[in-house]
Amino acid sequence: MKPNKFPKKQKPPVKSKEKEALLPKPKTPPAIGLPRGMRDILPADMPYWLRVRAVAESIAEAHGFSHLETPIVELTALFVRGLGKQTDIVEKEMFSFTDQGGDDLVLRPEGTAPVARAYVTHGMFTVPQPVKLFYYGPFFRRERPQSGRSRQFHQGGYEIMGDGKPVIDAELILMCSRFFADLGIPVTVELNSIGDAACREPYKEKLVAYYRAHRNKLCETCKLRLQRNPLRLLDCKEDGCALLRREAPQVVDHLCEDCKAHFMKVIEYLDEADLTYVLAPHLVRGLDYYSRTVFEVYPEIDGDERTAQSALAAGGRYDALIEMLGGRPTPAAGFAVGVERTISALKARNVPVTGPKTKRVFFAQLGEPAKRKAFRLFEELRKAGVPVVANFAKDALKAQMETANAIGAAYTIILGQKEVLDGTVIIRDMEAGIQEIVDEKKLVIELKKKLGIETS
Ligand code: HAM
Image (cartoon, rainbow, N blue to C red):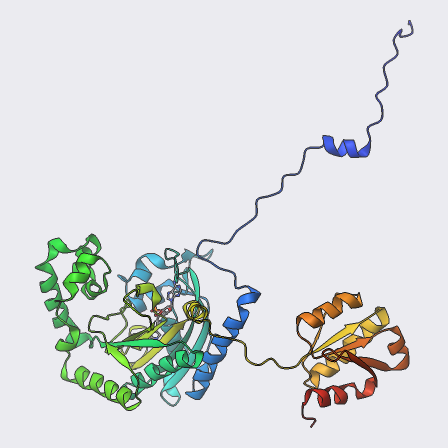
């Protein structure tokens, strides 16, 4: 064999950086966003959330409510039966699904039916009545997201079960109005009575007769409402329908004697308490379980720019619901405040949400042995009731002092190598810029003295 005249040209070695460049580039996956109509609650908003929750809880406590939480997921049947098949929520707004076991489930769209279900499930009729229950948490409605309307929102709710007296309705309306007063939001309470099943039927007939006579002026949805849910005719926001409403028969003129007497009593109690309210003869609410008293609370605004979305809270009596859910006949009433809308109202009015700050102590540590010891001392301080903050992830003193400044710490404890060996700590007065060395055993007592915390 003849030797190859032209030896194969050797390729120069490829450098590793060039090799990298030849490899197919990994694609950055697109960022995953939020589902439509859902929101994150960011740290900057947390003071508002904490304030609203604190006021909601203080009202619950003052009126003797016990806290209850029901599951986020319930059987679909609960809302179909409880709220009514032909309500907006059940017809088009429920996040519903069938799980792997074939159960028809739904993310709870509201809290009253679940609380009524819990009352029946746990036989709460056996304990002294009425039962007063408070809940606070997320709810889900697949609505068109817009200002004041999201698909996950939060409510604080109050339900009183087992008492049909008008004083209960008045107490709830007062609580609701005080909730907003405590937060510094001026509101208007709108009030109506829609009677009970007995007086509502003949009224519905009159209402249908009136609207039928003007059928050609109704919007398409209201034409359907004529047959399916005539009370909701009064709720329509379309111009033509709103105009017709002015002359429509009013439910208060058709109440039976008992319902009328009940409503008058509610009003008397509210007058006695000097609560300002507006009688709203066309207020009917969008859920079928209501009977007698219904109310909605709106932010007080100048002019007439109110929209349906701006109700901050709503409620009423629902005497038939518990029986509809399989319990014994039990009168009940309640209301729920919308947390997001309340927070928007607080922001719109620039209501301050942070009270006077408590003086805090920052714990800074330097070096591994100090970090270990700081863990123990930090816990001792916390247990003793000293408001102490630390950032154990940081090593450099400079970064830790920056955090101390950012949180407005009144004092910073500094624990370094030398202090660990000496059994001491440094306490720095952040405002005066003065430092002192303290025996670590006296740390709790020294700080309590400086912060004016009583020692037991
Ligand atoms: P609701 O009127 O459907 O009543 O809701 C009460 C409040 O929750 C509303 O006034 C509003 O502030 C807020 N809210 C409702 N839907 C949304 C949404 N999509 N986005 C933001 N906020 C919303 C009930 O849920 C009844 N369970 C109230 C009740 C309690 N009745 C008797 N007891």
